[in-house]
Image (tube, rainbow, N blue to C red):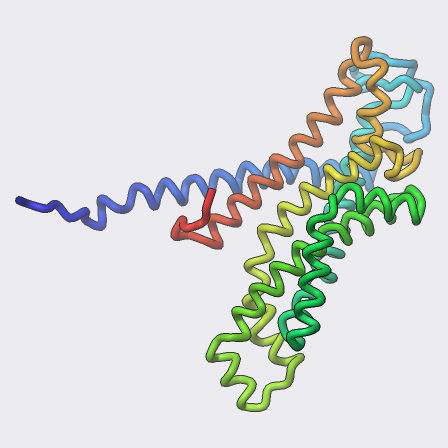
Length: 289
């Protein structure tokens, strides 16, 4: 019996398909998320109308003057959508930064401390991860008051437990490597050891979870704003726009469709970016999908 062994050329098409899928995810995610970022940046430079301007007429359809129409108070919807993009981007980056700093610090402490400290922190992380993220965010916002800063802090704290657990697991594996043992034997201090060996090997593992947390943070901020615990007026959040448009969705559907569309675009864009980053980090395709 003749056994046919696949040649290198026959093995290339799957690899090219995987690279093509990775490139497509990165490009599509970058385009979708890039549009939101551009809108957010433009909102800092110039807005079509003042956010508190109510002279546009109530529930007007899209027109050359008001590209997306007006809401029930007569405010320009396109202006509100631009401000909502700014809040979404600020919330995403702010909460991810807080989750990364707190999570990495706690995870490194758990990995490098003694057994008792590690067990105690691991138990606390298990409890924090099991606690509903949105409920924890609502408790923090209710305690500090409804504001964008409170929402960012609450969402960042809620997401830090997952980052801490991943950091602990990855750092523990790195610390068990021979090159780390050799570095310790040569007299390398703890801080230098973390900077030279631990963090460079931990960050690649955290890129994808942090990207996914960005999308979760945007959804959480919209949810908080929907129930009145987000950024207060005159700041316009997509979540509050959806809540305000409920009663007039049949009369002015654009007031409900457009915020939801931008919210979905942001989440899909971030998830595609995360998927592309996952493929780049695992080019052999061993990641479970």
